[in-house]
Length: 207
View 1: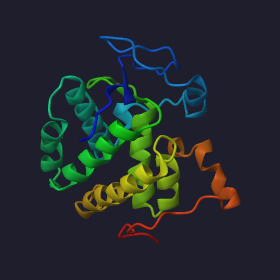
View 2: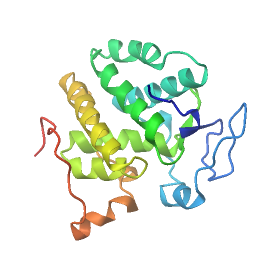
View 3: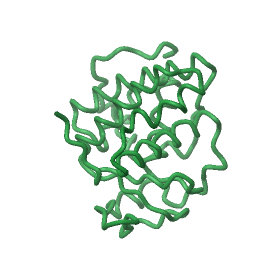
View 4: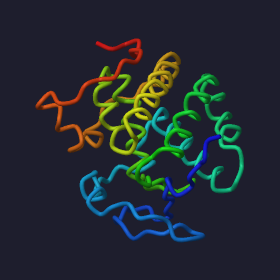
């Protein structure tokens, strides 16, 4: 049986990311390392109001899932409505699996904001970028980003779920374009060709 680790998701109320030393509303949460906060677009002005419908679907689903986990509810039940309204109910299964893998195997805590927070957590931007990379044929980037918080086996499993979500979304016209905010130093290894893609299925529109 999988053990869900609530501390893998670090929820914060502020709408401006301020690095480490944030705490959960109920109890102290593990800090996100200051080095990570500084390296990942910490001063980006991107917020919820700047997101597209496709991006908002991902962010809201993340927040609902984490909120349900912390409230000891069934996260899968809570996220189904959003994907059903988007016309892709099957995507909720892939999304739930992605979040379960993260909650059980992540090697560090991830910054996720409260439901109605206008700011974006670093992890929320990460998850949006995962779908964007997959939809734009950048599966190597997707795997590299996942590897930032997941062990290799878990990253491979998650990549397969990301591809499913990307396909479901694109099938109903929900496409996420690449943004400059998605490109970070964790992708620099590709300049030297050091990252190899695991043996998983391809996204249907890979170019």
